[in-house]
Amino acid sequence: MSIVILDFGSQFTRLITRRLRELGAYSVILPGNAALERIMQENPQGIIFSGGPSSVYDVGAPRPVSGVLELSVPILGVCYGMQFLAHEAGGAVARAGRREYGKAELSSYSGELFKGIEGEFIAWMSHSDSVTALPAGYEVVATTVDTPVTAIENRALRRYGVQFHPEVVHTPKGGQMLENFLEICTVKRDWNPQHIVTELLESVKTQVGTGRVLLGISGGVDSSTLALLLAKAVGDQLTAVFIDHGLLRLGERAQVEAALGPLGVNVVSVDASSEFLGALEGISDPEQKRKIIGREFIRAFEREARVHGPFEFLAQGTLYPDVIESAGGEGAANIKSHHNVGGLPDDLKFKLVEPFRTLFKDEVREIAALLGLPEAIRMRHPFPGPGLAIRILGDITLEKIDILQRVDDIFISALREFDLYHMVAQALAILTPMRSVGVMGDERTYHYTVALRAVTSADFMTAEWARLPYEFLETVSSRIVNHVHEVSRVVYDITGKPPATIEWE
Image 1 (spheres, rainbow, N blue to C red):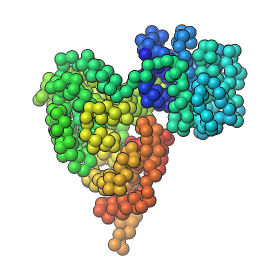
Image 2 (image 1 turned 180 degrees about the horizontal axis):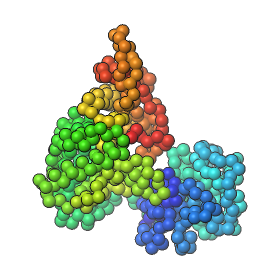
Image 3 (image 1 turned 120 degrees about the vertical axis):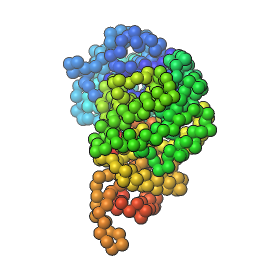
């Protein structure tokens, strides 16, 4: 049993999935126009129509296939989804007199979705259209000053609609609304780490059979957790290869080797830095960097496969956010490719094993704890597969790698020293191509500018810049310019996601 989310292109669709899973209900995202047979394969106990950028009255506006509205399961429409429900039932939708974007307070609310909720209700709005006339059988159950029809329901048909986004953190009581919808759906609430592990183990065993699996391991939580999962599923059919592409953090190779040794995973360490850096010479475009690194990773694995193989499968720790940002979801814009999503060559000689493709980072961490991964690795900040290649803006040289490694080490070490490391979700340093004038020892300098970035995030789909103490930032800045003489200026990035991504490239 599941909740099926039909995706009409909202940037928040995956957050709906995450919230429902946090509430213990398995949910799956399908394209908005998914075939009825495909929807029924998921045994839906309820359906959610997501938001989206279209207007329901436009020619060619997205819509579910015939038969979906006739299913005898509860349906919740969010934003565009609510407008579609109203429009299809004979109501009217038109351009709003005043567009709402951001936080709004409900002036009144009632109904089944709001059961048990009391007091002030702040909702996150993002819409240009509004329902202007109710269809028969529906009633208004919530309003704001600017939107008279903010939520609707038809109890007889179990159809519900909200103009705002209950799934985002900016709607603080939205989680209770989603829980109320799950109660209406009477869906089984057994989605938890143990259940996930059981399903993943069975899935891997079924896919791999007696085949051998090659895994690229970085020492981060995703690949390390995947290594433990695969070892548990297929045992010595797995060989984990650690590829040193020359773009790691300072001393990282030694740290990874020391950390992974006791985990019982067969790890082969390979120094392929010359091949990677040679292929990246003179390349400045971030998309080219990612694709080259993806290609070189595969080439390195192919070389190791010939030595340690044969292997039929290549395992990757691809996560939901990777797929989303690489336009892996219906209606999603291509923000940037990921080395393990968009950089694979057409002549790939392996079958892919990607058990985490539908999971979020925090779900992987929960699985890691269950599998016994050491806390130091389990709670390690994400580090991108392309490594420092996408944190060096412009072309890559050995000198720039050395500079950024030292800057990054100072920043991350200071976060640990000041007991701030676990207060942020991710922290990074970026070497920019900008140089600026400075003064050191009464002499003029003209050196690099580096940017520091730290964010807080629950799921990495959205993020806020971390409010690090001024004293800490002052200390780090002073250490960097005093110990990394090629740098004369340090700046701190205070942009959220959206509009920015967490990484700069």
